[in-house]
Length: 400
Image (cartoon, rainbow, N blue to C red):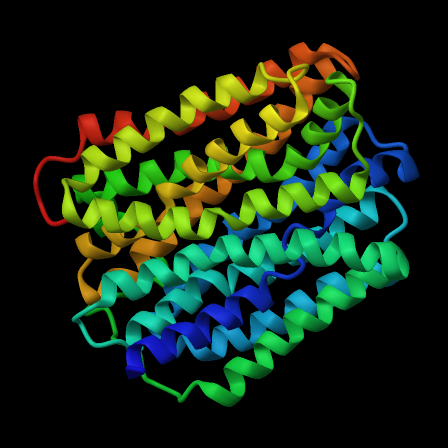
């Protein structure tokens, strides 16, 4: 096994563990709605607050890796993720306490995900970087799937408080893995940089900006899909006349998130062989179409709903790695941290917004109404079309 592949697999494992608490609340939204008497909008806020804090801290922490070894940032962030999950399990008892600990969750992931990519990029040889980077970004789906599965499984065994404690320990183990396995390495310093996070040089590059805007559209769609998919599956099962258990819906959602990993890798492989903007525009356009199809599918036979959801889940993630690799390809080595930080900041704002919009759409339509889900998935599809629009207007030639 080559050193680059070994390092990539190590950091993929670290990321999967670090993300163990990322979707824990989303896995149990139906239960928390009943337990704490939450509206859909309130559940959306609890889910979205982690994206808000991610948006606030990720640009700073990722840009910091142009000056500080990303290894140190990742290790500290895994500790924050442990505190967030364990604190939720021990102390959360309603809307406001849940918001507090989910806010900490966003900070923890902000310091482990993209800084982890920077730690990988700083330690890889130039040849093969794109493929290894795509493996790392694709493993975000594996970590998200583990978060859904582990939370649902542990909640059945230990109750929801025990489940959050358990995923917190997994996040802590990610920090220990990074501490024991990664050698310290000085990062490249951006020449003449005075500000920790100065996105202006990145935003002046129209081709880089196209990828950044495309990733924002991707994040908008992905966050809403992963936040509401368990609740949608429960609704679709009931509407089809074949109600499913919450654990079954969570297991199906886990599989839907899991298939995003090979889809993301395959999308980047295709984009590396054909014009990247063209491939990404096609994927994102197809994803918008399937969002509308899935939102209208409640009431169809449940296996058919799951099949449509599986295709949609593949499309949701097929653009992820290909966009990030494109962003890195446009950025100078000393600005890669800032480029990813800029992308992360905008994407996080979009990821915070979409679960809320879907939650408000569901409340507007009324509980148990199919129209709310049609509108919710239409919102997801509309958001992802930002990608094709950006490539059409901004991406002209350049490296891909």
